[in-house]
Length: 510
Image (cartoon, rainbow, N blue to C red; front, side):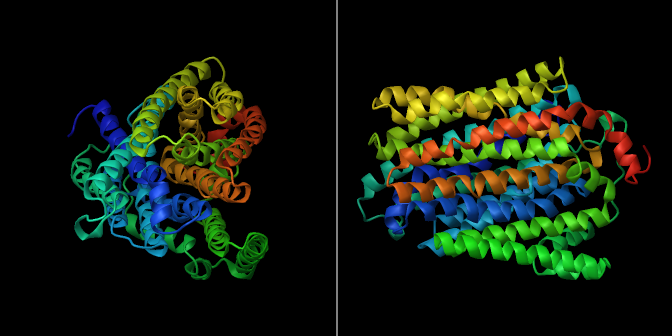
């Protein structure tokens, strides 16, 4: 499997396709699981979003660090094997707790893939082509999401009809679907291990030597993130009383916020899990500032990067939230059979989403060639385009028109994906790219995945109307537009001062 950069890109796209097949298949299985396990929309949103997202984001940080110091192809292969195995195990679950545990396992496994892939691809292609390349890679999101709907819909419809309640081992169609999509990843992991490993930073003339103890670095980063080992890490690194007090103060504030939200909503699991995830992220940021001041300066201390990441995370809120509930919307509101929803909505998500993300990456690079802010202006266009289209799709009584409108909605909603990945890799040094990508994905995952599907599900339960809940979720795009404009203002200066700021923070060899 050794060959050109395009070969590696093709294999990594396939990995990302399986990533989102395994992640997104819950959408088409939503109604079947909800009925069989007696769950509500809020619980289904938790299974798809929070249970997966918190562990995906938290473990993405130490695994991103491992990607910066170890062999990236090996990490991607191992991650693929883990999440594929946990997806297959999802097919053997019998209740909410077991399925939540399996989804947590999927999240941990998937956490190691994208930061390593972003870093690897950045060392295979020059900066001028990165948004295009990373958009092509990210197109796996939509190919995978679309395939998951098609595969899941066909398996459920055919399996349950064929066995009519008398299936082998009592397996339902949704359980067989999990098994069917999990196994192929175990086979692909063997091929991924054979990909070439480019020199880190070689294209920019900043080659990074191999790390002498990569797993020790990973263990230290893991200790800095996972509670309660975070306090042990502070003592081990001699953070002092002030550092420990700051950490405990943050923990207390997050616990208080979670308590208030639990009191308001009655949902202990959602807000406790999110508070633990945010505490882990805060602890990591503390540790990064002590361990690697230059990385902390560039990743955490660049205002334009913070605003852009927050703006894109609100786009992810709409993308994950509305995207997850689109298949249930057609099943409930338009009463389209599950097999037909899988084919029609799945094909739309795959084709339109992939075209949107690929075209968005190409247009972002072309626009950036004219102005440093070009990529962000492209993201702004993608932010505003769904505002008239999605309400039209949700409110029309015509099933055919709604399905047709889902095409431009999917295209517009995917055009910004390559922008975030390319912006992050441009604003840090080569040795920091995987860690920076993990931090970016952490923000996008917490805001987009942990909150989007869950809150829209809760609003659906409260309103008794999924359509109305999805419309309210679209308001996140307005906030995203404002944050992107703010972030774009400081972007040229941030790029121009990158080396100077890194050197001032203590980076040597520049």
